[in-house]
Length: 111
Image (cartoon, rainbow, N blue to C red; front, side, top):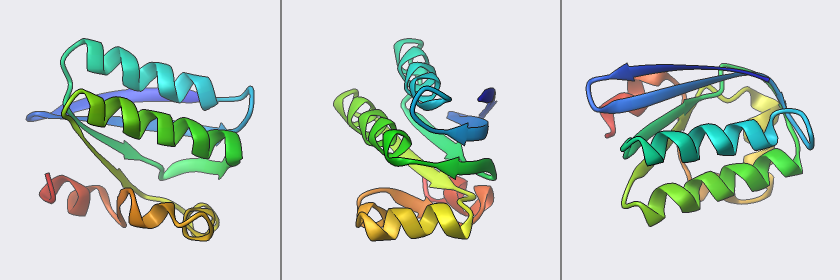
């Protein structure tokens, strides 16, 4: 999995690309979030536009990211999920836990 980052005002935006599955991107996502938290980021947006697949391990890592951010009194937003990934979020009822938006602009305006 490839990860790029962008700072926009006081929001850090992470752009994972590829699959987030067991052994292929799951740990990288968590490490990226924890690293940015240690650097002081408190408003984090993860843009899933270029993520093609997310499995249960990726979901678990996303929950871990959410917990890490909340423990640092931060906020997490997610945007750009394709229908398959959002369907998985709905099936696990996590769409009601995470702040999920369709677009980056919508997610940024909610911070």
